Image (cartoon, rainbow, N blue to C red; front, side):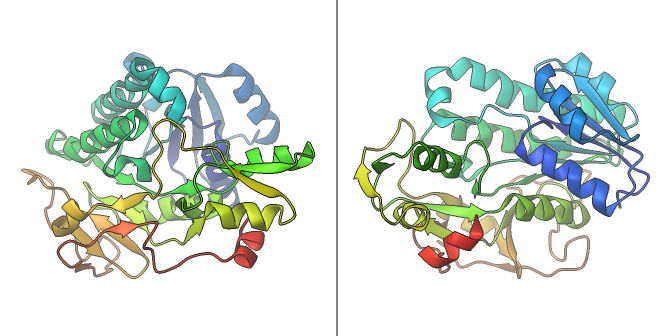
Length: 328
């Protein structure tokens, strides 16, 4: 699918973009991989690791629609990973988060339609389901924009979908590097926000593979959600430093005790497949298709029961302390 294709990754110098680039180069022979981001230092550092002839590096901001159009010319596939992601930072800087996460999403959509990109997948978050913080609210708005964008393409073959998943192990936004630094600095305790706190848990490679697979599956308009395990934060701390005391420090601004990926209020729109869920659009498309099972590769999904909720606190699969040791 990606052989001799041009792929662009917004926010491509982040943890996801680097692993996605590595995976594409290992498995396929792409024509171009375009890294679109605004940090020249991170691009310079990434160029030292990924300097294949197909690599292209564009300095640009998703807030700049004209620059996006320039970068997307001739592109077949776009992964939209650029976002402001830190929950407390978003609470204190709401307008900046809105400009990047909502206006930026709108710009990606406009540019992709104008230049005729084939397929676009936007990365979302469990915090977009029943959001209580500004970051989650902006990502929910972004998700809605990408779903509705399929109604704006007219007769052209441009399709948009969304991938939503939970905490990614070891990335900059994960608690793992934070705990690792404290342990390295010989702390006498690990701070725990709440003893009952749970999170969905996925490795970076699992996230990348899920996105790759969904380019094959997508019809346009789906929100794809992987079936992944949950973990308890206290178990994670125990797996990393069983000898250290754990001290409760309180929930940070905008945090939940448990995260949700398939809200109960969307149960009438949720299909369950073997290894993932799909939330189908609530709107009817005038030009794109409106049937979402089977998907593009023939996988069949079944509607979930009315009132079903995919919640990290009630997830049937939890990682044990021993499993967490190997999961990192």
